[in-house]
Image (tube, rainbow, N blue to C red; front, side, top):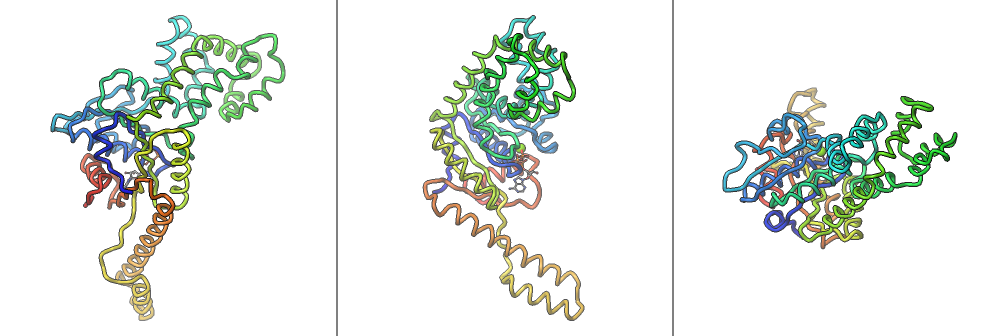
Length: 373
Ligand SMILES: Nc1ncnc2c1ncn2[C@@H]1O[C@H](COP(=O)(O)OP(=O)(O)OP(=O)(O)O)[C@@H](O)[C@H]1O
Ligand SMILES: [Mg+2]
């Protein structure tokens, strides 16, 4: 089934780009946003850790956590705004909005909070969701495109809110908050929570100081539990909405496509709408009419004749490219075979990294099924 990006752009309010690390999520998110803006929509793209040159092209020179218009990118009545997610700032803003001034100060200054807000596994995913909820609530945008953090597993993104709320309202917390129960087992318990961050935290803050900080932090934080849980639920429902579309990005490699397949299944379990799978950085077969076998054979002949010059090297390069293209083709075909109902689109590997508006436009064209050349 063919992925119809322009339909997605015209009809959806939220696009979430996910996938495993390094496959092109940030690039895809920016390309989708640009294309939507160029087709007349008012768009904001929330990027996470964009490459420096891409950030510059989008006018993102600082992490200020609010959308800024991208200059010179759009005409046609559309608007493109971009922001880089600042995880800590988003966390701080939640505290400031939902706790009274004194409480907020206590939380923000607490050393435990400072480390937690920056290091807790899943915080970035959670904050991306928070930001999405906030932007949606403003009602200002026709389309919000969300990039997701570079996690090992794309599924982490969906698990984050739940993990976060479970953590914040968990038994562990009650134990820490109730002074009578705080005993020598806290260290062990902390470890058992399974958040590797604590290893670092424990070595930096020790003993009584640790317990006091923890207790102060969670006591101050407790007033906000309801808010966290409720908003996580709201965002979850937002992700299930008809107006939302998940774009799963993968590279044409077995591991990335396996991850994409898990994600597609998971979306269906969660009743979250899949727009399609993007196979990014696909290598085309070079135009020369030369089989890889023939190229290698010719290269060998040249090498035997001690003509190990650029010609032999180029022939081997050609053979490698053809073999790579064939390998990728097999991988994509195998993925698509049992998934006729999953819309799929391929984006070619561009000659250079994609870090400017022109490059994004080419990726957008390819995403919409056109030739990216
Ligand atoms: N189709 C493409 N052709 C050439 N280069 C590409 C293409 N798509 C992405 N890139 C480049 O690949 C690199 C990784 O892309 P990107 O940052 O979008 O991946 P990501 O999935 O967001 O990574 P991370 O998981 O680290 O956030 C970037 O340098 C980008 O310019
Ligand atoms: Mg990225």
